[in-house]
Image (cartoon, rainbow, N blue to C red; front, side, top):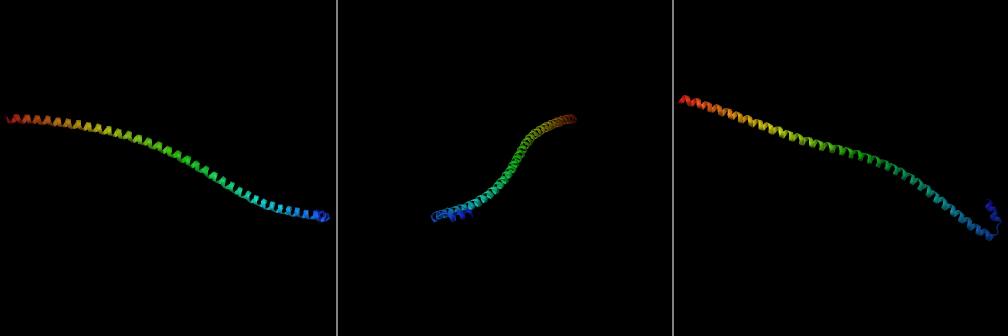
Length: 133
């Protein structure tokens, strides 16, 4: 109001200049309001993006933890598998050794039985030979 009163007291040429300045000021204020609205929308969008980014970072952290845990589990299972393979090889060697010992013992037993039977046969043959003669 004071501006309008002051404007009324200014000569017409000056009033025209004030009018131009006033329109320029009003236009600048409208642009400022528009820019302020844009800035507020951008700030809201940035907050939403930051929230999403935080959520994604948390998800990534949990996934990395899962990957680490699974890698540890894979490592433990691999070590167990290697240990089990070594035990299997050791048991296979032991089984082969026991099998070889049993075979050798069986062969010795067969050889001894064969010799005993051959000796008995030879003895019988001698006795029969004496009886016939």
